[in-house]
Amino acid sequence: MKVERAFAVAWRVAGHVPEPVLRAVATIGADAAWLRRGTGVRQLERNLARVRPDASRRELRQLSRAGMRSYSRYYRETFALSSYPPERIAARGRMVGGEPVRAELAAGRTVLMALGHTGNWDLAGAFATVQLGHVTTVVERLEPEALYQEFLEFRQGLGITIIALDGSGGDVFRQLVRAVRGGPTLLPLLADRDLTARGIEVDLFGARARVAVGPAALAVSTGAMLLAAGIYYERLHGDRRRAAGSPWGIVLDFGPPVTVPTDLPRAEQLMVMTQSWVDAVGAGIAAHPQDWHMLQKIFVEDLDPARYAETRTEAEGPA
Image (cartoon, rainbow, N blue to C red; front, side, top):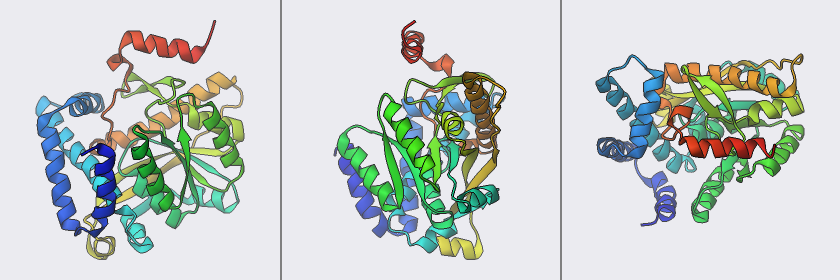
């Protein structure tokens, strides 16, 4: 079965399958992928080795298994998410440090959020639409087109406004500026992996990594508040577990606003602000490494040197 067809079937079926059955299937699938130790799992372990440099090989394998189960939990929740009533979505989420966000949105202003690929960002988006208000975000244009359309329809069905990311990123940035200025909206951006070839290098877990510059660039261009946010899973108990219909919920943990260093040139502003939110996101990953679903290469040492040099040349433009 083609992947887009499999995803389409999962979205239509998952909401009708009992939660315990979904959990069991997701766990079996995660363990099978972990045992095969394919390219994605091996890269996950290399990434986690930077988060936990003192971990033994056995400890890293255990951590990657927990990571694959967390990632599988993301998918099985996402496939069923459109069938959840608002009260179930509300019960599955919890906010920490959300007061500044509420205040900005209440004042009619947009809030920018820099996120890592942690926890369940789709559930967090649905939770935010219920608890905070309108959400706008960028989605990578996936291949094949049918798969992208499935994700697009799913996220729009949650009440989220979607802007599609193409290869250049230029027109997307203009659309984002308009969205910020047309607020109020909560604008989360998954930014711990550069998808546009225009990212910048930062320090992450003692190594150089390439991340997206978009959150900082938007904050500088529009004056909107920027903060980092971590998303991680927590065990639920008692009334909340019954209301959520699951033993798992998510925490949406907002960091403090990132300060704009007005005394620096723009390029240095972007660097300082990006490093600031990366530090905050990194602290959240360090606290909950099993919920960092990064099965791709983001650290410079892992990248192909020749291709990376071409990417940097392309981003810098003609001399």
